[in-house]
Length: 235
Image 1 (tube, one colour):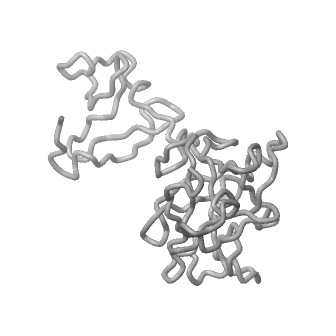
Image 2: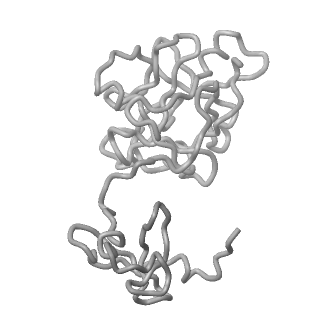
């Protein structure tokens, strides 16, 4: 395995595309050499250099990249899908609480080995590829198959998948490293910057902008929107 010799080897300077309509990336520590694709591989190349991938033919086009395109993979944390999981609160003093649904709404509640079978099932979801984007995630209820966690008017709830684009968006969350320094934070794909957050035992999506709603206050947002993806209470 090749070893990166220095930070400079992993640093690129964005330049106006050598070909129109894109960006070219010039190596910081090798001026005049660019990130270039050639024969299905990617090289550090210099037009007219000694190696085959340095050929001047199509160099400008091959060394120009469309860097402004939407990301193909939108989650920064990779999670196993089609597996049952439970989401545990990571906020200090509340780490025995898990996300569960009751009367279709999402809450957090203390769950333990002595909890009822119903509570354990309510606190277990099957992690699926995102309904709106396969690089993100959706949560399907274990005891109500076909129902997913989605947000509506900021409140998170279980609801049956209705086939609409709006539902798929509202039921899809992208995984980020936990804002609180631990666990995973789930960002709404339909409202970027809004996260799955517990507040006063209820679950919302919130951005922490404090727009008049207590659940959206910035205090404790980082901890309250960080979840431990835990073993399922209903395996």
